[in-house]
Image (cartoon, rainbow, N blue to C red; front, top):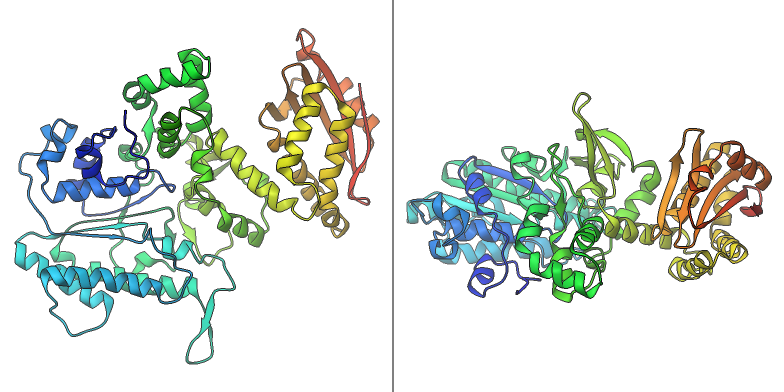
Length: 531
């Protein structure tokens, strides 16, 4: 089986015999049931392949679709002029790059259909060439825009990227690029009578001071249940299309078929793009996993979320204050550039997803989609959070893993204290009790999430109360209770009084109850004990 890793052209996939998960029935419905669409999906989720498929369809390339679902649906196979633009390959941190990319596309279109205006305005020239295409072919034009938002994401929340205009005012690249895109896309409004179909894809939907405000609002299908699996791989598709590679991976890992499917589900599944809650596997990670016959963090390793870390720091919000909560859709669907709220960007970038919905309140529970994203995102956040200290989280994690697996509590606490020394200054400068408590919770949240390679249960509820953390290792079960400005003995007493260890009395593993007290004055652990 040939895997189309890095191949985003539909014709190449079909002609060269790569595996293709057939989405063409949805492509047909999309192309014939509306005019202007917008789709938001995380990076490397198949948006470029979708647009390439639409391009081949509107060019009437019937032979490419022979035997696919659309073959029995489409009867006419008309040929339309297609304008396909992609902003995915350029770096827009350099002033003038966006203008150069747009101009290059317009000039290439004008070579085909002619230039019919003397204006140098991008929107006017684009509108005219669309009209010229309609007049020459007799068919209205199709416009496909891939990664429309990359010129904004490249410069987002970067205060060092600005220039001075003729009046001496500082203009951020983010504002500059947004204004250019807004004017360029404004051509769609004036060219409406010459347009058959328009689709824009990207990671993020910007609102308010939006690039969409210059033309008729597109139909946002990002949460439309009809198209929730338009990009990505469903469980049914995984089991039917990839049955053989699943069995090969199971043999390599010495696992049963059922266990291998469960491992793939935990690692790469979990994305939901509508209230229908159909689980979607990350296609980039799945294809790489089967190609290399190994399970790694392929999608996360393909791009670091630096702009999200900047947004979190700038907005003064911690990830533990955002995950595991219900939100109305308007709080995470549109990113408002003039509001300091990182949640929409984190969700739309694929680091959070819908995990449940409350139809009565019309709210959605957001959390990490799967283990790949959880572990990768936490490692980036922890690396940034603990970067001032000598202990690096990656090295620390290996050392603490050895200690936990050996039941060496003293070594575990030594490693905990070493890591916490990295954030001492934060607690020393927090005079407000609430802020101190907040940073204490965030610090231990990151630590416990870093230990997520085990069955880690944070704030596990029991009939008697809520355990701060349970770590289930192969030979040991650790029950941890944390105190801020208290004592280790009071933490152990709480474990005993509430019977937190009772669920593990019949467990063959040794149970270790560990009480830890953190001093906000000292900024580190000052007392711990275990039973």
